[in-house]
Every structure is written in C-alpha cells, then in structure tokens.
Image 1 (cartoon, one colour):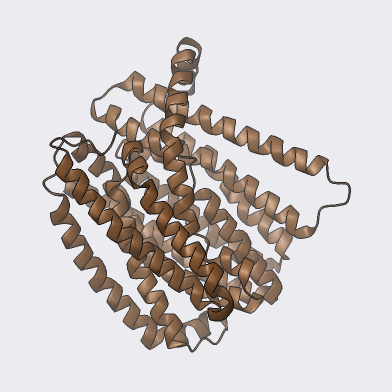
Image 2: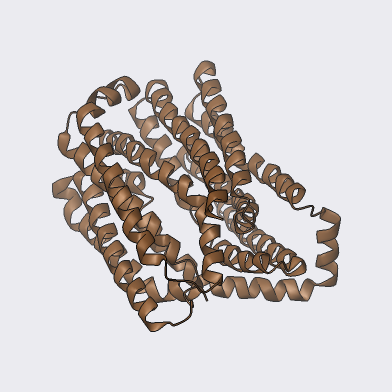
Length: 431
C-alpha cells in the first residue's frame, strides 16, 4: 500500500512545485507591474484567499474521514449519500454567504470603494471554489490523490498563463484580480466532471439518490455539520496561527513591511508547500491504517519523519542565509539583506513542516475536541505576542510569534498523542 502512494505523492509534489513557481512568478510580475500600494493590496487580497480556501467549515474534513471509512468497506450507496450530504451542506453555506453579501451591497448608499469591491470578489470566488474542494476531498478519501495532483497541476499551469497575460496586457489591479480569481470558479465544474468520470457516478444516478433518500442525506448532512463543528473551530484557530502572516502584516505594518513579509512568506511556503504535497496521499493511507486498529507504527514513523524534516529544513535555512539576498534581488527587485530575517524564515519553515506532519494523527472529531485547548493555547500565544511585540519588533514579531505558537503546538500534540495511545487498547483516535 505504501508503495502505491509514491506515484501520487510525486504527482502532488510536481503540482505543488508548479504552484510555487506560480507564486514566485506572481511576485516577479506584480512587484514590477504595480506600485508599492497596489502590490501590498494584491498580496493582502491573496492572504484572504488563503484564509478562506484553507477552511472547509469542518464539514468536508468530517466527510473525508467518514467517506474513507465507507470506501474501505466498499459501501457504494453510503459513499454517495455522504458525498451528496457534503455537496448540499457546502451549497447551503455558499447560499448564506451570497445572501449576506447581497444585503451588504444593497444597504450601501454611497458607491463601494475599490478595495471593498475587490475584497468582495475575492471572498465570493474563494468561497465558491470550496464546492470543488468537496470533490477533491472525496478523491482523497477514495485514494485518488494522483487525480487531485493532476488537477492541481493543470490549475497551477493555468495560473502561470493568466499571470503572463496580466503582465503582457499591462492590466491594472482590478482587471488582474477579476481575471486571476475567475480560475477559482472554473475549477469547480472541472474537478466535479473528473470525479464523476473516475468513479462512474452519473449525475442522473445522484439525482435519483436525492429523490429517494433525501431524508437520509439531510440527516447525514446534519451529522457532518455536528461532527465538523469542532474541526472548524480547530481550523479557525490554525488559520489564526499559520495562514495570515501577510494578513497580520497588512493590519499592523507599513506597505514596505507587507512587501517584505510577502517575499519571505513565499520562501517559507516553497518548502512547506512541497512537503505538504508529498504528504497529501498519506492522509488517505493513514485513515485506512487507523481503521485496522493498528497503532504500533506511529512513534517509529514520527521519529523518522522529524529527523528527515529537521535535516532538510536546516539545509534549506543554510541556502536562504547564503543565497537568499541575491535570489530575492533578482526575483523581486527588492533589497533584503537581513540574515536575521532569513534565519527566522528558515526556522519557521522547519517548524511548520513538523506541524503539518503532526496533523496526520488528529483528523477526527473526537481528537479535534481533545486537542482544541492545545490549538487555542497556541493561537493565544501568537495573538498575544503580536499585540505586545508588533510595535517594538516590527516584522520580526510576525515570524517569532508563528515559531513560538507552532513550537508550543507540536510539543503539546506529541504529549497528547502519547497519552491517547496509552489510554486506548484499540485505535479510537478517529471517532
């Protein structure tokens, strides 16, 4: 089974590398195409996109775990019921968002400022794309992570093309945002068609399921929402720790500092993104291993993974310290000659990779309930440090607060995992 994961892992790594290239190219293009204010605004809008698309309201995480369990037991009707419950649940959330946004627009007497219009467009496109994430999570649960990687590869390639078009057409920030985030909307029907084709599920078949088992689907949707609520609280806390480096910079720092944080955030994301892509297929594999109630492998895997991550991370940090200044200058046109910032970025990359790995073992509602105090504590540490230190430490506070919060999270998660394993003779971490 593990060997079967290598090829999907390679595809996902390739897709993530292309996605990272898209991110690197966007800095190269937009730092030259926009002035400093529009460049900072663009990156702040992108941080909003990251925050939203990293959320699935807990519903999809619960769906992925439940669907993976039914797929392992080859229960087709239950699989389709859970999938349709996920689609309907996300459709309800999206409808509520559209209604609230529409009310907000209607009550405005004066024309909305340009920034507000852009924020509204990014929020809508990002949230709509979560409908596609339903299919992506279903593919992962059914061990089709290679297909997810191929789709992400195609989407990243499309992003590269769009960035090239924006550059050659010399578009302003409004036109650029409209074109760039249109891809998020087109992603939804594309991945839905691929999912249905791979699993031989026809729309007519699913519609028939809705008409004959609507009450069961509705009940399942309620269960997913209830089980996913704790997952969502954890996700929100994780986002407050991880995703909004640029978002916090936009709220607390100057435009110049936002640009610097953006550049370093891309460098950190390069290593973390590739690692996450390589780990992605193993989420489905770990669910299957957990279903078999086998937990003897866990701490052996943790020790090996930590050693590998730390060694690779230290090498990446050394590369940033040695070549970061030259690379950043030719890449973005900015001069960034602070070894302290490069060192902090390298340290942050190591810590984030370790945290991403530890999340493998905390995917179910029960474990999310059990580690919720840990996540909230780490979140509180970051927010408190930003509140107390942003004025005196400036952009250093962004990176230091992230490192401290995630280091706390990792240590406490290890202790919690050890405690859970000692308490359970059978594997009960998932439900």
